[in-house]
Image (cartoon, rainbow, N blue to C red; front, side, top):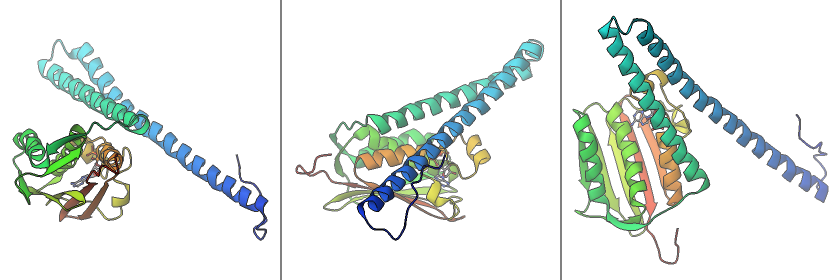
Length: 259
Ligand code: ADP
């Protein structure tokens, strides 16, 4: 339906201002509804794909699984992988819903260098490529929501692990006013025209490749929500075939400026 009020563009009276504001508001509502519809459609598509695979393979087990052990194993593995994938996406969606509607920050004082080493310990055994930590100081104390900051780092490092060729360097530093985390990989990069969209929910540069690597397209959207909650910024730059750089800046907490 066309919700726009007809306007006499030359008129600058109060009614004109009012209708301008109304039209602007309606445009914003329409954009937000369009985004919501897209989000529901993307989420449904994700689940539909996994459910179709689970349905297909479970039918195979029912028909031939008792005679053919290889087929049974293949089908069970596929069912297992897709169930795990659906569980992961469900957790991510619940987390986004919480970040959207009831964002909570539990602040504590922690060492950013230790936190980063913990993530390396989690991820390094899963990869034959290397994470190299380059802190400017042996310890960098930070006051923020520790599990959330750990998750932001984990999301970026997990992406780097999927796409890097040889190594990913992690630079940790601080100034008087900010903490800065810079994660630089030497991987396949992201084409310039795709960069503006990577923080959107369910956006993946290469859907089929990213499905194989287990990506849902929700990681960077979650990271951005968390960084915003800390009043920080997250920027991504990339050179196709020459790697990707993600910079997270979190302002230091001032007692006069609580979160
Ligand atoms: P996913 O769960 O698919 O990794 P993200 O939101 O974390 O979702 O990332 C969105 C998309 O951005 C990914 O699917 C991938 O195509 C691209 N991407 C993110 N980080 C990198 C990187 N370091 N190198 C290359 N592509 C990346």
